[in-house]
Length: 323
Image 1 (cartoon, rainbow, N blue to C red):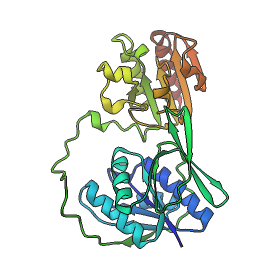
Image 2 (image 1 turned 90 degrees about the vertical axis):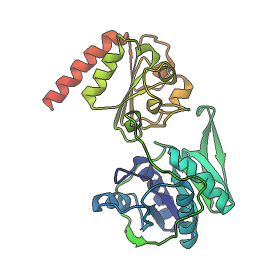
Image 3 (image 1 turned 60 degrees about the horizontal axis):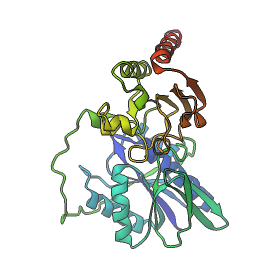
Image 4 (image 1 turned 180 degrees about the horizontal axis):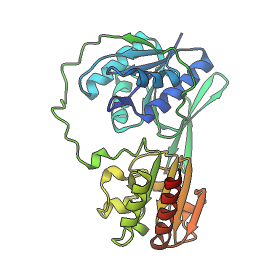
């Protein structure tokens, strides 16, 4: 029996949202093919966090304990576990670390790594992987015959499931740490900018260049504070130094899929759209009625953010006060 392995990236003692999205899709495919869906973790988790993996369909949860992340060592762990459990597919979340791990794992296994997978389809016995190109204006369909296949999952492409009811049996494996490392992480220094967690945020307020002025930006921040949401930015806003690089959404930034996305003065360039098009509900505010963002938004407000944002802030506060 060929199984499916999902590497689970963990942050602050919990699986990140994208890991659960990847595991959920892997589990759906495993059920379709009558295989096992395995989750690989590198630290012990509390019961409620383990239950998230079970809810996402993990048949077994393989634990290989490590004190700290190292790309070479973690790549070796994935390779060893995939081999021992006869895995034909290895799912990896498309984070910075995941995109670092995937090609190294593929090279070690002499196989193929496919990045930014946003859809998976069946054609008879074949599995077709869909990836975006040119800011998602072109979709490429790929069939990979060589196994194991390394599948790097794009954020927001698949639903995070909690109803798949995997057994989630805990299995601890002892894999010797890689000693001959080419790079060693001595210390990790976290800046305030690095604390921005856009990928898991249910609500994101985005500042475009049209709302980045000294007059309007405080209103954008106030709206974000009312929602308890992080602020993201388009590339011009990042380049202007209004927001840090960690808050950029788009082709050269982060891929997000919040339940609610609010774009303030965002025009909707294709590079930005490719990073947030999978949002659950999109509200756009722009004074240009021809702004491309309106083609994607669920609700579009044509108007000046300087006028619209105070009204929106007031209404949100009323709703929260009466909740």
